[in-house]
Amino acid sequence: MNYLKFMALLSFLFLAACSSENDSVVDVTETEVENTETEEQSPLYTEYMTCVPGADFSDATVTAMVDEWNNFEFAEGFMFSAGQDPVQSVSLGGENVVYWQLVWASKEAAEAGWSDWATNADADQWRAKHASVMQCDGEGRRGYDFYVNPLGEKANWNRPTQWVTYGHQCKFNGEDGLELLRSAAAAFDEYIVTANNPEPFTYGVMFHNGENPEPFSNYDFFWQNYYENHTDAETSYARFAEVGADIQAMFDAAATCEGPTASDSYQFYPDPNDEA
Image (cartoon, rainbow, N blue to C red; front, side):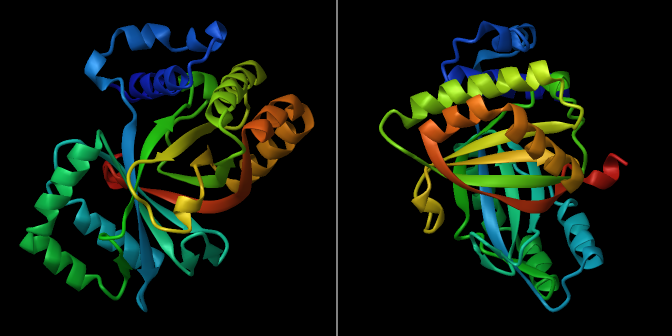
């Protein structure tokens, strides 16, 4: 499945999960979705590992570490991976930490992949070789159902291998929070389409899948906005603050959110060197 068609499917899935009644938004992707297989119509599963940089941590050493990691044969259902480097020294996971994100077709695929990885002697050697660069808490990784809604070309998002992530951690205000979030998301999608965003943009929403540790478990969901750079992010946030007050009120009725917290983000897999 080509990338735009795949991302269009994800857009449809989030809207379907949100039970949107806004036909003008659904029409953006329905032609693409008709050509996809039924069994693909489910959320992705994403995991985050908290990683502690070591004495040899640098752009060059992390790049070398990831390059070697890309030489492994990965399990079926493994789809994407990225590194998240918070702009501020303190983030939700602690002080001076970074994050390694993994995206899978399903939780079952992730469990099978980790089972294979645990018995891979070469993986043990790779971890030992790069222990002074970065050590990640694989055992304590967090799992989420992951919905992405870029609206394809309508969002002007061309999948860069480096981007910035602006995250919001949110708690529902009441029992009707999810229903209100569905309405707000549909209105936001329409805003994206009609505003014809000059800044490339997409977003993702994550809901807990399994028992995640504190402080992450203190929130009901995580909303992440993706931009190509921080300047675009600041411009987009300022525009929305000026013209999106009605939609923001819908979000505020659904949930109380903290943030945004900014991170520099880097594609780890598929190997960005193969896409250069």
